[in-house]
Image 1 (cartoon, one colour):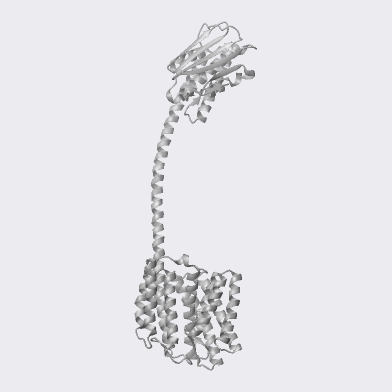
Image 2: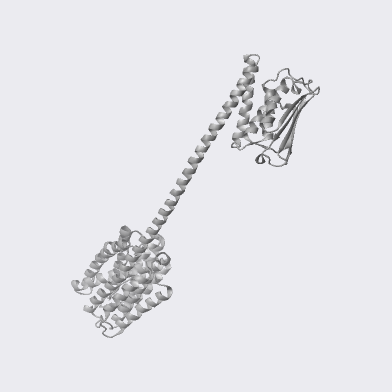
Length: 514
C-alpha cells in the first residue's frame, strides 16, 4: 500500500501543476497533501515515514523543475507541504481517530472544521507570508486563494485516498446496480464536460442537482469518484481558458480563480455531505435491524426460558411426588422389617444385629437403583450386592441372562438374597468348609425362573415355625405374580422362584456367566 500512495503522490503532483497560476505556482487546488495525510493515517509508522520521504523528494524536484521555482523557495514550499499533511493527520487522528471515516457525518464535520481547516489555515497563512515576501505579492490577495487551494486539495485528496484504499469497507448504502452506477458516473462526467468545455459556459449550476441525485443513488466510494472526476474536469478546462470560470491570465490569479475555487468547494460539499448523511442513515437502519433481531431473539429465548421453567417446575413437582411416594414405601418397608425382626428375635442384641443387616441390604439395593436413576436394576447387580460378604474363594456361582428388574422387584430380590445368604451362612452350605451355593436363572418369554441350590453343607431341616425370612422368601413369588418354593433336603436347601417380568424389564437373552 505504501508504494501505491507514493505512486499516487507522484502522478497527482505532476498533474496538479497543470492547474497552477502565477509566479508562485499557486494551484486551483492541491490534492497531494491530502493523499499524504491519508497515507500517514492508514499506514504503519515505517511505511508512513518512507512515503513522507518520497513525497518530500517528489515535491522538491517538481517545484524546482516543473514549477520553475528557485532552490531556496522550493525547499520552503516542500517543508510547508509536508508539515501541512503531518499537522492535518495529527489533528484528524485526535478528533476522529485514525480510521478517517468520511461516511460518518459527525466525524466528517469534525475532520473538516477541527482538523483540515486549522491545518490549512496555519500553514496557508505562513505560506502567504512567505510568498508575499519572496515573490512580492500582496498578502491579502494571496492568503485566501492559498488557503482555499490547500483546503480543497485536502478535502478531496484525503477521502479519495481512503475510499480507494478501503473500497470494500465503505461500499455500502448505494441503491444503484452496476449498470445504473456506470450510467450515473458517465452522466456526471458528460454534464461537467458540456458545462466546462464551452469557451464561456454559464450553466455551471446545472451540475448541483445531478450531484445530489447521484449522492442518493451511489455508494460512498463511487460518489467520491464522481466528485473527483468532475473536479478534475472543471479545474483542467478552467485552466485551459474554458467554462464559466475560465482563467485567461495565468500570470496572476483573478476573480475567476476564486470563483472556480468556490464552485469546486460547493460541488464537493454537495457530494460528500449527502453521502455522509445517507451513510449515517444506512448505518442507523442496520443498527436498528440488528437491535430488532436481538430483541426478537431475546423474546424467543425468554419464551423458551419460560416454557423450560414450566417444564422444570412440572418435573420438580413430579420428582417431589415420586420422592414422597418412595420415602413412604421405604419407611413402610423399614417398619415392616423392624416389626418382624423384633417379634422373632430371641434377644435385643440379636434383634439389633439382624435389623442392621437387613437395613444394610435394603440400602445396597437403594444405592444400585440411585445409580440407575430409579429406572430399574440388573438382576446380576442385585445378586452380587447381596452375596458380596459371602462370595470369597468362589463358594457362590451365579449364571444367567441379562434381566432388567423394576425398582419394586429389585428391592424384593435384594432382601430375599440377603435372607438366603444369611441362612446359608448360619445353618446351610456356607456354614461348612466345603459348602457351595449355585444361583442360576433363565427366561422363558416373560417369566423368570431362578434356582438357589446349596450343596456340601449340613442337611436342611424345615423350621418348626416360619420366621420373617422364610415368610418373605415365600411371599416374593406372590408379590411378583409368580410363586416361590423352598425344599429342605439332605443335600441342602433349594429355593425355586418364578416371577413375571414386565416387557420393559426383559432386555433379551444376552448371556452373563459369573
